[in-house]
Image (cartoon, rainbow, N blue to C red; front, side, top):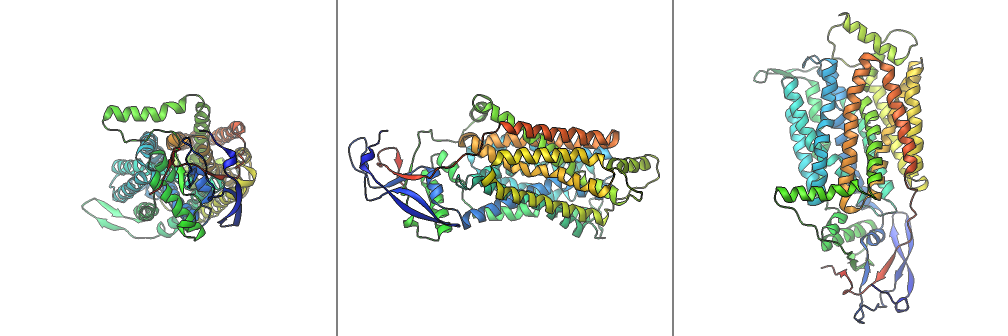
Length: 550
């Protein structure tokens, strides 16, 4: 395509957003550009990214971020709820420490086995329908799990719930990122990810409200007493239920619509964002049509061989140059972060409960845990499923710090960039994890242990990195693969930490602290923050690969 620069002139316009007015450059609509046939066109065209920039930033983006955040909060509550449920259920289900470790790993195992499929489905059928279906079914299976009479049925229903939970756990990051323009994408993904931290505050609050209750409704046909821990299983699925209702009123991602050839629908979503953000009439939107890139329209595959070919087409490029190094990097870093933050968190309430019940003087965290383990092995303790009040209190305080870290990262990412934040946070939290094992003061040890968990604030940043460096066609698959490796880390971490708590408590802190430090060093290879140039609308002929909206 050739351009005649003398045929148009530039004039400044002001596009409103939530921060005031942003001075952009726009080709004057009254001028025209020559197309290949020498005819004049009179419509203003822009790429999808340029149109997203001109749609502004405001109420629509905030509401969409809150809805996506609710999905993330539901995901983290269901994933980590077992940290509170299993100590309270250990007497009813007659759980050993090893069984608790395996049950804690079941949600992550389900996500590992199915993330690939959900990623392919989201890239071929759409982000929104995948999340709608998966969240609803996950909530239903969680409700069924609350009636499980013994450990096997509880584990199976938990597994089925987690299978569908994985459909939204990774896709939501892509869905959130694709509704924000290039200037605000990193920030909004970070703010949305802060709901993971908020979930770590809500979870102990809800657990504190429910677990101390003293009811036991007998259900003879199941052979169980419906006790508070069963109600907690249902309560942790409520965010998914609410998010499903909200998602019914949300559109499909404009990026996905555009990539699959639904240009009219994509442009309608962009105009809706503009109208909501600026409170202006849709006719005032300066973009009148989208420039259509040369790309093949996406069609849904039919038949087993076609599905396999489609999945292969979505995956193989991720393991070839130039995407292979980024695929390996995002997978490795997510593995380390998830192994540490989720692996330790499922044991966090048990560790805090042991510290709360310790009557001795100043001693290391691992010494307290070893003392409790020896008491159980000597038969000096009976089954006790009560959780100390201070366990909930400390968990809430730590969750508040955790969510604050997410919010701080959200404010800093636009000014500092993802790379420096990832390197600094991961290195500092890794050092804190090693130090938590070495100090004798329990209060300082708990603080360092809490800081160790702050590495989880980098999960959203790594997904923001993936949204930026992977093309739209492979983006959901890339994020699902990296999140799948993260879930592998969660499963490996929860079981290894359970083993280390029995065999060598200190080795767990050394191993995972060092892993996080190595992750920080690998993040040094990430590309630096991209500067987003001022975008201009290009006046182009409707016959020059420009799609006219209906």
